[in-house]
Image (cartoon, rainbow, N blue to C red):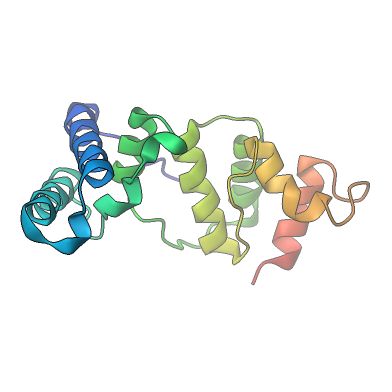
Length: 161
């Protein structure tokens, strides 16, 4: 499975755009149009141009600071939209192991949780630690039976759509 790369040269520009937009949305009513709405639309256009993501939505980063730091927000904006690529069972097992063992930063963890959702049809919201995100869905049902990451991986494979 190919790991998406973040263009570090663009990261600073994306951070600046997200921060400006979040502050603008915090201070002004951008939904009413007018000058604030036009400024936000310009920031939206800039974000899409810099990231190359035509579906990037600046509104996703309103008050980003309440759930992640600015760098993680910028990385999230730069990551491609996860698509189903037909990962093998072994790829899915490895991905679950990597997430559970915190191989990735927060932005990449959220990205790969979304990849798992696309590949398996099972959603995993970021809940506590990455391992808790994976285990929560099944461990809360039967902790003794689905307590290990290996057991969780097997359950994910068995339950996928």
